[in-house]
Length: 553
Figure 1: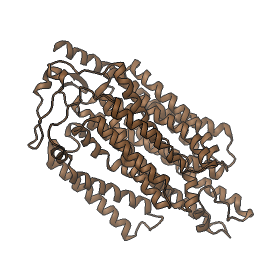
Figure 2: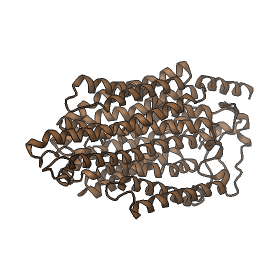
Figure 3: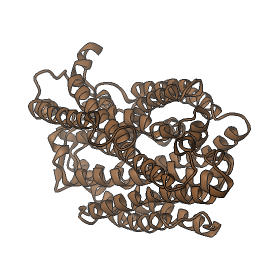
Figure 4: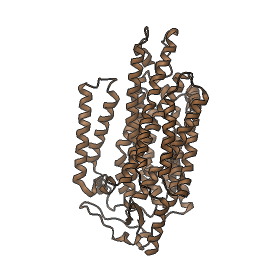
């Protein structure tokens, strides 16, 4: 982690390179800090040049790209395994491990070079893709997705930490928004390629396709990625560094998240909310989280989340905003393909094409937002505009009917897609105007955790809402075998339904899917409140303060 000392004026970064050699760690078990050549000379942070940044940009882009490749085949997978009730777990297992390992990677990036941790994360994601591609059952597929999630969490955090170490502050919004858009571009390609592979070959090739891309990414990382001279890491053996990772804290925290998600996934569907299993999971989750907080308080300055990050107003609001935006985006990412395939009778390939309006508009807006932010300096207007457009777009998704026309589902996808593109990159840039340099990686880890947790929690919650509404609606239709329909999967739901009842079943299914979009509206409005009370820090002013600090040195 970049631990060069900074002076902070208000909430804006003011780099003071002259203090970097005087920086010490106030923990008894911390290792000595190595000093880079640029900083040993007592001068300023040294950012990489264009040709040095080029291979890093390629590596980061490819790493983010492979995260978004395996999408849109979820309904078809549920058909093959006859496991409609597992659809939520196909996404939740991935997000569960992503959010539960996020802070572990944050500590790894403090102790080891970005290059090697990032390469390891890509390798883990590739292993998960192999398991998913070869899965003989729904359970095995879920395990593969969980392994992939362990790798994805390190990729997301590592990419943005690499940007913070390598790119000047005023250019970071462009890099941050472009990197965010790359995952969306992967989502553009994935529905088309994945849908075609699912329709004409097999959904398994959606995951086999990750292998050559991921392999090339690892090669670029190992042989061409140059570590920034600004990153300072602890000296010492690997064993001594591993002791700094707070494994007990991370284990307790992960247990709390797992228990909470299991309760949300099973409550009201597999078990009643009054079941001893559900109550027990919720109690264990609460107790484990309380223990984690107590351990963090006792650890003080060497805690997983430093107090300077934990109690920073901008960080807290960015975490909330990122949580809300991620929850909304991932809900539509999972349930809109189900609506197209189950209600509009679209094939997986056609479903991917029908999703393009939202993904293309999101990608264009995300890339554009970086350049806009670099010009105007302030991220808050983009967050407010993005939230407003998302709320309108998601609100109209709840009005979709089986006979909803092309112009409606294209237009409202574009509306919320632009809003999402404007909103998603901003927390990454806002964090860097509010924290000292040594705290930026911890702040980024917190935002990444919020993104992962928002997706995991709300996919589980919405899956619960969806299944309960579907079951209740089907029970009101005579001569319909509810369990048989649910087990058929998303796109085969009409195979066992009498012709006279098909229209009613489609209406019930449509109602169940579109009700999940109300969750999107709710969290987006909550995110808008966070943006309204956000401090108006400027990346341009932070850059000027950095230049002043250099001149004074």
